[in-house]
Length: 362
Image 1 (cartoon, rainbow, N blue to C red):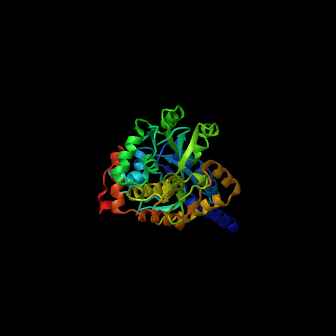
Image 2: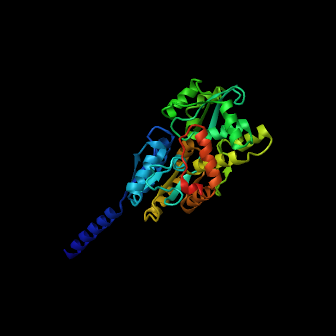
Image 3: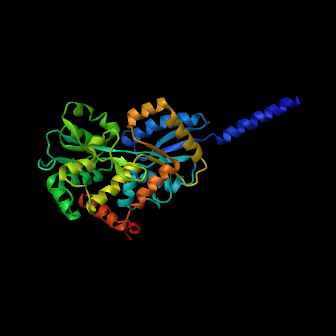
């Protein structure tokens, strides 16, 4: 009888200890369920959740759209930044932290978050076949959901070459029709498909879906791809389409490498988007970090899971733990006052209500 009591007591303590460590993790997406960020989250979290369940945990998605990522990040800062069960997908919203400093509740992605892991990203620029971007006065969107002004900066370099900041802005404004008024990325994609716009941009998932028929029929070409980043935070060709890399396309057109102050501003912003556009962060010193990374590693080691993710998210590298944190820190380290002030100036010139964040300008 005594043995029975001990066995029951042990069973209860086992159940209790399991209960105590069984966590439901919340994965915050700074966007709605339908855009590129939401789709990336659904595909990835489905696999991560399966692996976490093997350790007695699970993960649920919470969408916090609004203000191009500011709403989710400031909400995290105020109410979740000491919660070890919350992880946040960063999105291109960190660019807004640079250019729209109000309302972030003290959030600082360069200092007070810990990157758990990331998938490097690339973006493709689509052009209607037969359109010459330099001479045909094409229409391109300067709003519509996601971060698009860095794409405008890339287009400006492609059609204007290496000129001063002021010259490049003037050249771009006289070369393309800069269209705004789109409520989101979906509306903007539709406008491109019906030829109201002649230039658009999107990531890998939409390249193989939204633009698939146009590309196959030869109605659309990839004008260039921005590329992605390496372990040192430097830009390299996109592994899904290395032949269309921005730097090579620029050299083919201008006979020299892109350089100068306008290029430095573009390069900083495209690095932030490529390295942190699909990264996942949490609070510093999170006691759950190890198990989260362990389960993420299990996803990467699972051939079937990776087959699905490669097909849906592209064959971009995944970086975890210290390696991921190092890449993001190296990218932030390239931020200097001169380049930062040019970023603000350029984005204001293209219609963003950008403001200087004083601590970055000194």
